[in-house]
Length: 306
Image 1 (spheres, rainbow, N blue to C red):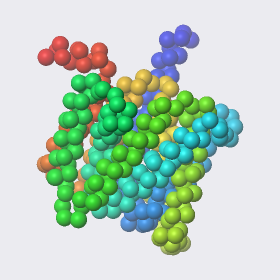
Image 2: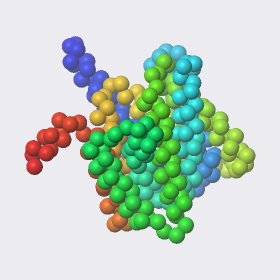
Image 3: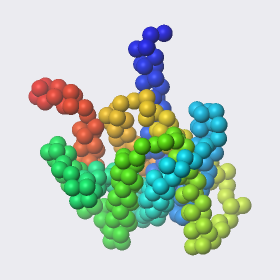
């Protein structure tokens, strides 16, 4: 088998992994919305990670032929991501999701480019290229349309809660971007899930008490299994595994399907209303994400075609 064939096979495998991950994570938005009728938000976050830990451990076992190890030089970034992305951000997402449509939430969480621009400009004093400024401006305008289109009385606080969750997610992403991993990323995800699951378990126990798990039906457990091991464990695991096999621009483009699947599936499964301003805002935000993910060669072809 030639080297080109082997590379092609690896890319094909990575593409399939990423597509499955994106579908799992996209469908998880209506899943979480329904799940909040079964379990309280803090317990959902805790169960989401705790139930996913065996899946991530299995990923490590299959790929590394050993149990997960914690590299000392990765500890600080593991703690930062666990705290900002999985405890604070996921906690805010789940709490806010009780009060706003799942489709709207799935789009708003992808305001990370706006927060990344602010972090880079204000904190790191970087000068952003014009393309990034324009696309972020379009995305921001789309976000404003969504906020005004879905800002019914009582929904403003959870809507801004989703934006804060996105900002916290962006902080974690930026911290990771400056880190050189000594261990593997999938092992880092294992420890992040373990830390987040244990911390959220304690918080849920204090603030929400112990749920009556005995009263849960098979359907309830099936839904929690999807939210945890399937969407979170398999979804994140496949996304991490696909990373080294694909170019960054492909990962960005395919990942853009997540909010689309989240929005469409929420409308179909939950019969959420298609509000014109929200749809317009979603189109602008997703279009900005798509263009941002396109390589320069593709953009030149599109421009020449016009």
